[in-house]
Length: 190
Image (cartoon, rainbow, N blue to C red; front, top):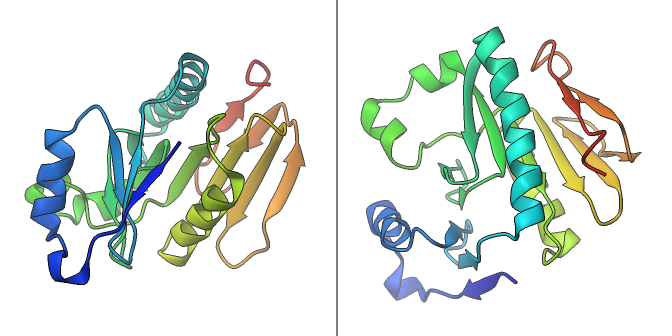
C-alpha cells in the first residue's frame, strides 16, 4: 500500500535533497507529487515483478532493433514539467529529446516527461490514483500511455488530445506511430 507523507511548505525539498533521499532509500520507490507530497511505495510482489520484467524486456528488445530512443524501467525517475517526480513501470524517450539533456540531467532524475509510459497495476494499487497519474503524464507531454490492469483484465490507452480507450483482455497492443513496429504481446499476461 502506498504511504503519502505530507511535507510542510516550510520544509519543501529541493530537487537535490529529494534525489539524495531516494538514493539513501533504494529499497523503496519514492515519488513526489507536484504539490510536494512524498509517495512511498513498497517493492512489488513476485508476480507483478515478473510481469513488469516481461513488459520491459519486450520494449527494450524492440528499441534495440529500432534504435529510436531510450528505454527506462521502474527504478528511474523523471522530473515532470509540473514539478512532480514520477517513476513509471516502463518508459521510453525519443533519442532527440534525450540527447538534448546534459550529462548531469541524464544522471539524476531527468527533467523530461517520457514520450511513452506504461503503468502496471499491482494487487495493492487503487485504480483511481493510477488513472490520475496517467493523466498527469499526458498533461506533461507524454504522447502515449498504457495502464495495464491485470485484476480487471483491462488495458487503458491514453493518447494526447484523445479520449481514453479501454480494451478487454487484448492479446497485443500496438505502439502506433510513436513506437513504429512495436507490438506488446500480452498472451501470457492475463
